[in-house]
Length: 443
Image 1 (cartoon, rainbow, N blue to C red):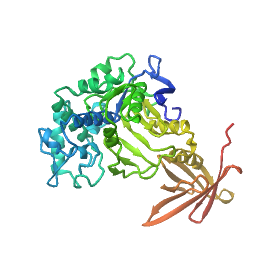
Image 2: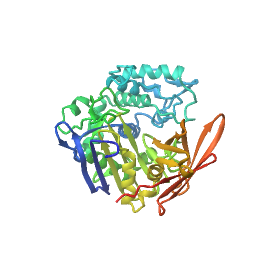
Image 3: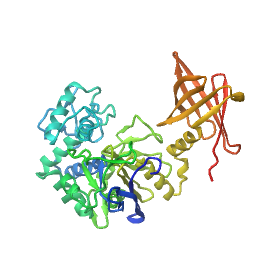
């Protein structure tokens, strides 16, 4: 929080439904000095997709649709890609073949005054027309072939839930999922959320002090949910227990297994074999066991909710800025499961990149360079002689001998490092130079 200047974070960590940790850190509203608590309400963004997937599977259980049905069967649009119908499971798994059409990005950018694009979609039917056009003119793969994250597809799923149930999406979710589970602070009604005295104010942390921004609305089944970490921990516990929480069953064991079954590997891998199921991300090689869940970001609301089925552990982290909620959640889960969280790849990266930043000098100070972290890359700036700047990308983030690569004049350049914590020194081997940086010793 200190590094990212995040005002508030709330956390709930449960072991088979029993709280191990439930608390807030920092503030839900800086201007009024209101503290973040486990009951603080946040926008949960794409964590909402888990609720949408559960709703669809409930309709499957009732025999109202099949995952193999063409989605257009239940929609007022034609939804075909390269002459083939997009099936319901394609939308649930982001495998429609349609790349992101950016409706939510443009809506948020315009709504919050962050750019020139402005798509004032106020109803799902506006998004459906956008989706139909995208299917005709923007698709790049046949359905089922490739993972392409598509918010518009989940908007369509929300419409399907409404048309088959005869209920508004928010009403359906409340009656059939959140109500039975006792998730009293969860809603898809933006006005209801905005009127809550426990709602966290979102903040833009690029300014100092953090600047409050308007709460975004207009997003629905793809990312328009509002909730608390206590509520989300209940939902994750129910899924980890094959659809049951105490005597309440929201899904059958078979339906939960359908949700959890990997459908396609993700293009960006964290642990290896990371995949997407139906509305959930699956990490089968998470060090403490298979992790299932979803992250979410509405620019200034972020979060993660997930569970380790084998361990019975559930986690929810929500924030009113971007402190790295998924990383916080995974770190806490690993620690609770008895795994060293410092060995998680993003924690290794943070430590290594932190050690590499700084000023390096060559023999007798004849050359000097600065390394500055930008994301997971490093920007190298030559100070003596001045002028040269280039970006170094990680090839191997080893905690002792990390390797980066750069490109110049069509050539690939390897930049090697050696970290010696005991001697308090980092060596950089760049082109023909050996440069050295001393590590600051912190008390």
